[in-house]
Image (cartoon, rainbow, N blue to C red):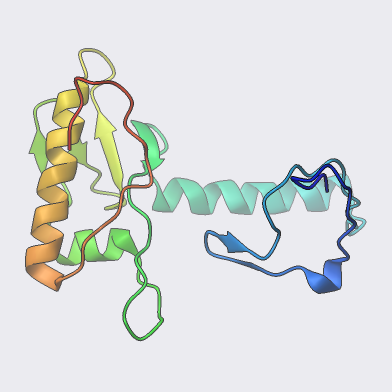
Amino acid sequence: MLQHDGSERIYLRESLSFDYRHTNIPEGIILWGVFELKESTTLEVRARLKEYFNYKRATQPMADSSSGCMFKNPLLHDGTRVSAGKLIDMAGLKGLRVGSAWVSPVHGNFISVEKTGARASDVAALVEEITTRVFDAHGITLEREVVFWGSDIES
């Protein structure tokens, strides 16, 4: 890893940890890595890929136009993490629509939009409505994972 002071440092697997949206790797540029892969046959790899894609198709709106998950999964006061999609679902918001944008009925943390004529302002208004209703229902403020660019988009 190239560190901010220009020096390089090697990190061994045993010293690394990964969690949701967090790692102990410091800021810097990862220059290279060595990965140990399990040997598998082509059939085994294809079967595993099919399994992953089938799961993804069943749990995410793959056919819709969307940016992926809109909100980060919040950390509760007791240190546990809760699914933003589950909070949205429990607030009864699946299918909620503002103009050209709606909460996916497949996964509450996905905002889908019309393939043509979608408006960023509709997405921003829907995000604001979701944030308000989830807070009202659960007392939890959702934080956007998606970054809005442009001065005409406010939420």
